[in-house]
Length: 426
Ligand code: GDP
Image (cartoon, rainbow, N blue to C red):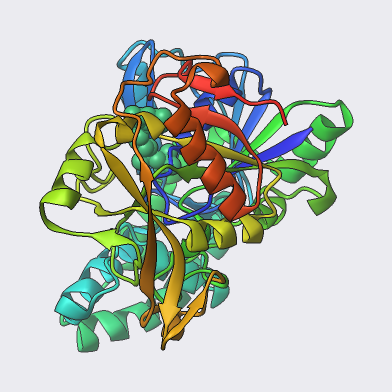
């Protein structure tokens, strides 16, 4: 069976933890989109890890980890990450890389940096991982697939062709050093020697795995609201963050995705620019940021402080719907135990009208939150394993949100560890 684990919001919902937890029963975990621009934080018996490129199954020796064709593959980052986990005594993971995955080129990262520099204060808040230039090139059909590393003559000829255009931009728009064919070729040959043992026809591999009834997880990055089509364009990422894209980015039939677990955090956080209706500021935000997640709400890749807000029912209802949610995993609930009262955004007021439907970006910019306040539970809920043992106000909070978003919350996460989970029968 194929299951997808995806985010309902702006990312950082705790997908890494849920994936790591479900990975214990998974034969295969596939990354299907995104690149090293975001990260999952995973806490387990080996320690605490920030994974950017590796699938979250790398801690289980029985799981095969796959980088699908939809990923922006940064080969040096991938190999540094493998080293960072094996250095902490995690056994070398079983890894396969799609021969159709495209590679982040060194100049993608440079172009990302130069563009942020040029835009200065008007930037999109890029993590400068080269993701936007990478996907631009992919769809402009001047990207490089892993498979192309194995035909050196045509590779060199293609580099020559592609860098003509890059050099015009580097020289005349950014006034920076230009690219040289031999340097790029040599770098790609280094990439080849690193990646060669793992290269695989992933869609063929998964076709067989599905036939054999293997348990497969598709691991999403970021969340619904960062999707280039359905999110808060243009403050989005460059590849689709939706479960549906899992079929394309892994190379499997869409109808094989039987379960879509959408991860929703008990409050909101976001990184980068863009409308964030339930955002809070000042001391209120600082306190939630400091207490949030596991050691504070700071970017796993960048260390940037995240923007904070109360739970947004409008955004989350939409985020769950657009994913095609079958199950909601409601996470980081333990963090809210300090609050006397918990504000929740239950609607948007746009031009004097109240709606619970998530609008397009132009309207979103004008939305004001409609807030309802629920009583807090004022206690530490970590360690609880049965839903009925949660304080009444805590259950009320969960059930109120479940009703608002309209999708079943079947898992409640009350701590960063693998075992900090409460299953609800639905
Ligand atoms: P992801 O990209 O969606 O995986 O999100 P992050 O890596 O930002 O994960 C969110 C953070 O919250 C990480 O530091 C996790 O260890 C932590 N975390 C996940 N679930 C829980 C939870 O239920 N409670 C607490 N306190 N922390 C959690």
